[in-house]
Image 1 (tube, one colour):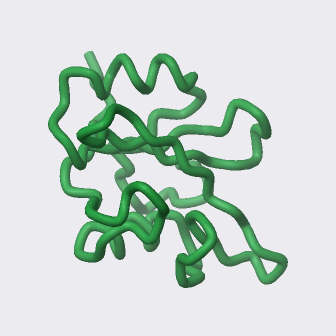
Image 2 (cartoon, rainbow, N blue to C red):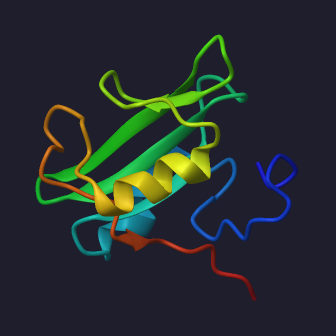
Length: 112
């Protein structure tokens, strides 16, 4: 993703992290913590992993035919995934079961 968005420092993008590895990172985090990772089922797709009060939620970003991205089924379309993330830092997720959540706390990649 960094090649697609070279000018952005995407600290919340963790690359090819598995679902279980994402959950391990989110375990110690508070509700509304999130990260983005490459989808395990399709390497050209991306997934959002979020910590909720019930545990974890994993949602796929879908790229539409016009190249725009949506999150879930009720999201407005955005030109880039960082735009989707930015929107949901100030709006509630339009995902069943996560309607009370916003993306408040990015889980940043730890660099040595």
